[in-house]
Amino acid sequence: MLPPDSTPEFIQGARNFRSTHWSIVLAAGDSQSRETTGALEKLCRAYWYPLYAFVRRQGWSEHDSQDLTQAFFAYLLEKKGIARAAPEKGKFRSFLLASLTNFLNNERDKRQRLKRGGGVEILPLDLENGESRYQREPSTVDSPERIFERQWAQTVIEQAAAKLQAEFAAAGQAERFAVLKDFLMGDSELLSYAEAANRLGLSVPAATSAIHRLRGRFRDVFHEEIAQTLDSREEVSDEIRHLLAALG
Image 1: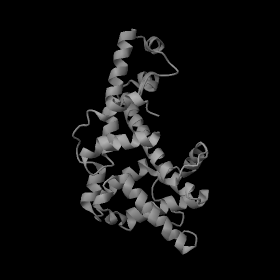
Image 2: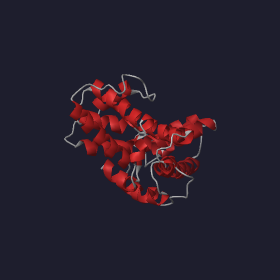
Image 3: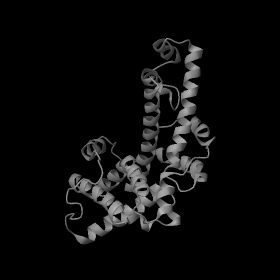
Image 4: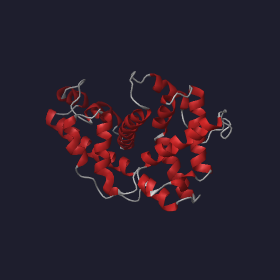
């Protein structure tokens, strides 16, 4: 969870980004172009777990939820479900949740097992790991929608952290990231600045400066990740506030 005092830093400094994956998809409408399909697939691969958790919370069994999640992506990718995107669904998460809700309602009306997917893998999703993750979720009385919003926010953070980790690894600084990652969103409860400096062979001021730069880069990557799921880059700050509120 992000600490309350980090909110201003995450909201400030939203930059002008290139065309986002979601804006590419929306602009193409029901096009089956390689660019559109690739952008949609990338978003779906990154953000499938909040959808799976939503389906499970709706009361579907583990295996039905796995089938339904894959079938929903088949609907989007093969049945041109993206053509149903409307201006008021400018956020990717809003479009997905509304589309998935309609999709599940249709499945309930059919009163039968899924036939559309037939167990065929549409996207390489680790659905079994998704079930393990779902079982580790704390027991709450939260609504499926609340679960979805919270898991979406957590996924954004995880995606941003994973991208930053990859950047450090590519630069030959995997060990530095491993030591400093707990400082991404606030002071670490496990490691002091002095201990981090000792592990990295740095002075405390040098380690403090490294942590400051890490947080700045994480803020940029975090903004970029959120922008990928929006139609308008001007929505980034509002979306950050929404996601922080969802984390509670």
